[in-house]
Image 1 (cartoon, rainbow, N blue to C red):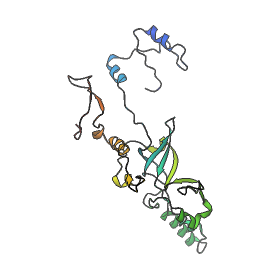
Image 2: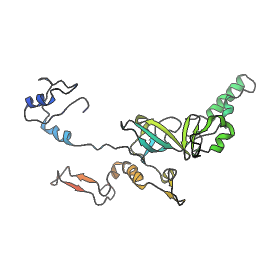
Image 3: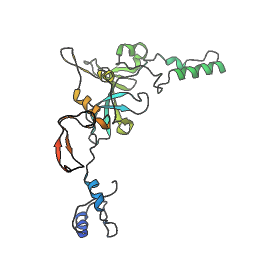
Image 4: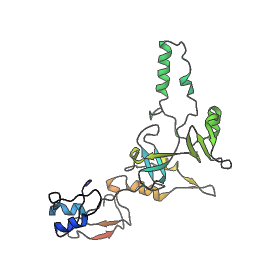
Length: 250
């Protein structure tokens, strides 16, 4: 529990000695409480938290890419910031006429402008641009002034509209609070958009990352062969073992 420190000891005096000198911990006689026996097993039970790893998948909670699948490119040591690979949704300036002068400058023109804004709303999942890998040739047609190569020799890395694109993917940093990290349930169509090209021209799918995402997809698929498990009920309670097969929710 947040804000509490649990110490296993035989006497209250031992707890006081153990906590002496620890920053921001102030044990006092009336603050040291014995945990009820029936609650002790819950304190010793470890809840496994899902660790984000490069190659894994998440979904974006809000903004232009809300609901889109993204692949983890890097995780900061603090575990709070991640770099994602995202299939871009770009119109390459095709809707710049939203800011063009209104036809008659009056009420009719204002209504037309509002309709155009509604039709191309960037955060509306149904109306936003489709997913497609970044194309520098399309960006040059209308936004050449907003396009700069990140390398003189590598033409797969670009800065476009202050965003970074590598091998066609948008590379962007996110706070973990802005991401959905559980119950991702990626479809095969979504995952194939992140397949890596091999030297021989074939495409490689990171099956281990896909398996990790599918494993966290629901309660019935929480285990895979090879996982270590502990029996919590019955005459085998407390026994540890290894899963050798999984059938449905068994």
